[in-house]
Image 1: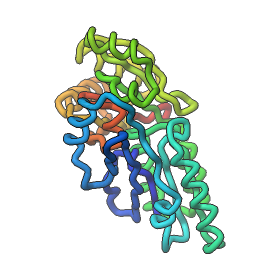
Image 2 (image 1 turned 30 degrees about the vertical axis):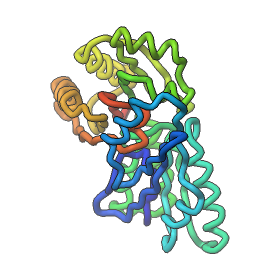
Image 3 (image 1 turned 90 degrees about the horizontal axis):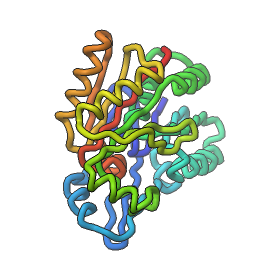
Image 4 (image 1 turned 45 degrees about the vertical axis):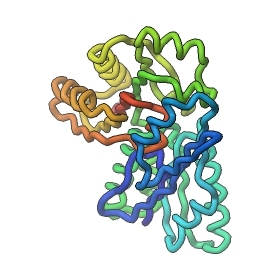
Length: 276
């Protein structure tokens, strides 16, 4: 079995399983950044911080998905939320085309309704299910049920790129920046960015993220933290969670290009299992 994801998953590899990634692309009217392993994220962030015109992202092409499918007969695909990207629809179109030449192929296309850390959590669970030796249809049912028991929470310090992308009001973003206020939020059930609060100070931010996790039903277990050039805060968040939940199993990952574009410097995300 093969797992294929787009680069919003914040993973570069997934050990002990056949895993492929197709890149998304970040654009301005002057330059483009392909979210592949060669992308220098620091250089991209430096450029975007000083760029004040339109920026946007582009989903993988159908051909990119087809190349990732090639040679496999059982394929699980996970994409960034369809509410913010055309990646899911592009993967669906690719699957339809692939089945025309490979009628026996089984392909499951899963809309994560999220991004980053939550996708990574789902992908790790999918890897574990495949390694357990269960059949395709059983794994498909179980991973879709698992997805119902994961959540994502975030804190962003800057909304510059979301503003340039047309997703946040410029006046609101400017006011928050001047006041040095962080925005906290979650991925809504529809897969959209849902702002839940405004917080000043790192300690309060981390406490808010933990409280949001607990309200969602986190009682310990697996969680993944992703960050943009903010490893210190990620480590502190991990420590805070583990103080409250001794059995917490937490990985920390640097965000890839697509999530770094939206999260920006000092952005931090945590995804966790809920009600398990």
